[in-house]
Image 1 (tube, rainbow, N blue to C red):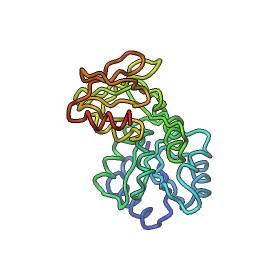
Image 2 (cartoon, rainbow, N blue to C red; image 1 turned 90 degrees about the vertical axis):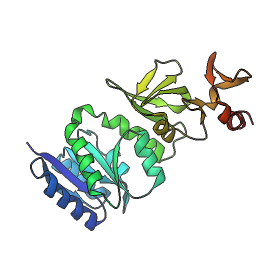
Image 3 (cartoon, rainbow, N blue to C red; image 1 turned 135 degrees about the horizontal axis):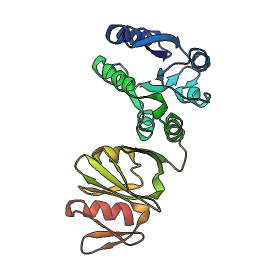
Image 4 (tube, rainbow, N blue to C red; image 1 turned 180 degrees about the vertical axis):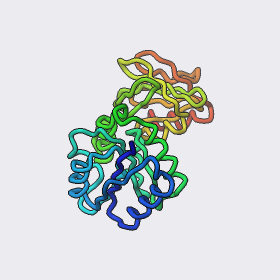
Length: 247
C-alpha cells in the first residue's frame, strides 16, 4: 500500500517541484493525495485526505504550519517541515527532534528525508509531544523544553531541570534533576545547538553545564553543581565559563 502524502506550501513552484521529485524517485511507494497553499486549506485537506505523510511549509500566507498541526486532534501521520532560512523555526524544529528540509530544496536531502519518513511508522512517532515542544519554542514560551530520543523512549525535558551534559564520542548523557540519566546518540556539538545559549555553558570539551545549577568554582578546576556534583572546567574555557556564570 502506498504512503498517502499531502503537500502544504504557499508557493506553487515548490509544490510542483516536490510532487515531481516524489514522482521521479518514489512512484512505487508514495501517492500524492492532495495539496494546499494556506492554513485553512491545509486543515481541510488533512481531515479529508487522512494522509500518512505531510510535507509542511512553516511560513504560510495566513499563519504557520504549527497552526495547522494545533488544529488537528489526531496526528497519526508523519511530518517533514519545509522552511526557508528562519533561525527560530529551524531551532524549534530541532528541539522537537522533527525532520525538515531547507528551501531551496536540495534533491539529495529531500530523498534522504523521504526515505527516513518511509521507514518510520507513524504510530511510533510521538508527534503530538514533538509538535508541542517545537511550537512552544517557536512561540517563545518562557520555560523551554527539548525532546530527547533514546533507543526505547522519547522524553520532553525542561531545560531548567537539566543539570549538565556529558559526551562520550557520538553519545551524550543528560543529567536531569530528580530524574534518571538520559543518553542520546548525538555528539556534544549537536546538543549544544539545541540548548539555550543564555542558560548553558560549554565548560569543557566533554561537558555542558546549566549555569543556574552551578553554585561554586573550586580551584581544583571543577564547578560544584547542585546538589554536590563536580563538573570539570578546562583551562582553555575557564575564564569564559567563570565570566558567563558568576559575573
